[in-house]
Image 1 (tube, rainbow, N blue to C red):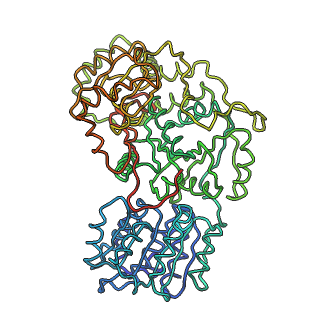
Image 2 (tube, rainbow, N blue to C red):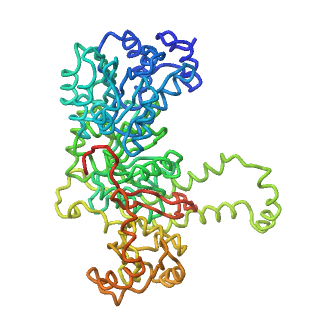
Image 3 (cartoon, rainbow, N blue to C red):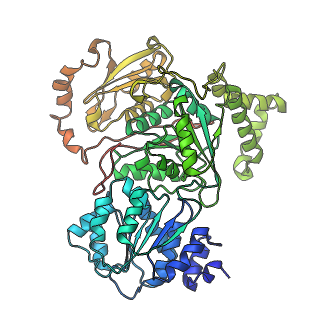
Length: 614
């Protein structure tokens, strides 16, 4: 018998979750479900992300609601669109054997008229983000007067995102005798106030100690000089060739710049931040879930509600301003009983903050050393050896090519073939890490001058070559054409078939852009764009020497460029007020192999969602 049956879950729901792989309840499910099934208590559940909270409240709801009636009986509020869709999808899967279950997802960034039509057709469970839910309430398009249960999922994150007033307004439309179930990873004072305001003598369940981190996560920190942070970060990534991680930055600008720099350096990365439109965000997350992206660079707000399995590493490129946010960050790995690693890259003055985080999460960090260049090359090499040793060969596909392959290698012995393959695969790593310096800094070093002003990263990315190695070019496309630096990088590389590493600084302006390419690639780029058009007008690339610097090109704005664009009519094509984000072409992955496909990011406000700006 499935253990969920002994908790009081009906047979048809147990059959559905058994097909989903639910064999044994997690601790939060085992202890919360019997309490919630009684339907007689308000409830506060404190547990880390990835512990199975959706089933902990979702399964009892499916037991308690009357699906013969078609009016809203349960409201689930959560902080982000991703979490909203995830909860809705899970509830539908759990209830696939139950008749007449209607669950509607209500969130910003999608058609509100479609959501209103779904509500009008009849619904028992509404899963919503606060901003869009408030919009629908203000339209008087839903009636919560008979709601029996309200679930506040990830309550601490909703408050961090500034949804306090929205939650108050929404809950005011629900009956006083409803039951409120609150789930949160941490219990700051604001969450405690919500519990006190909207609940009566709630049953409180804490899995582990309040605010503590997941026991399956190892916590490490590396101490480096500020000027070496990006190089150290890349070395940590290279030392973990199978990494599938989320990298947290403090600001949107830093997030974008780190992602663009990684793309230039050949990594499969993309950014996720508050300026992305919902469509662009969906595109990034789809590629990340499909593992086309190995490194997702994100702000705290943008990463809220991300639920991706098998994240191996969380890397704190910048420590969060609020210590509680570290718990949310690290909780993206080590989910559902699996192990993970949370890494912090800090300078010597931030060691004290590590000690504060240790006290909050109740776990000690391990001080780790940035690997040497030799260590990285060795790890990458033997990672490849391991892959070769364990690969499943499709004999049918390879058989037709084997005779010619054998003939090509007939004058080489096994040792020579292995040596050549290894060198071919790793010459890039060997060259890059030749004479690589030690990047570790003393943990309590006092220094004040090596931090970049404002924490900006745009000029730190190992661009040690002098400008004499680059040619500066002009292109008649800019930010008004919905390009960012990442877009421009991908556009140039795709069209001219050059590596992102051959492109230097990109100086994006409104209607034009200056960019640098290695001298050896300059003519190739110019030739590649001789007959290219963009949205119906010719693209021009010219040497930038005669156009001055940043103040130059003004005549281009009022002269030929405007004429080519049809009087600037392309401005009207912009909707949502945003620029597209990173759009890259084929870049090399960690092993140096060619990967196809672009990175998509962008800017634009989420429809109906309020969020803190970073």
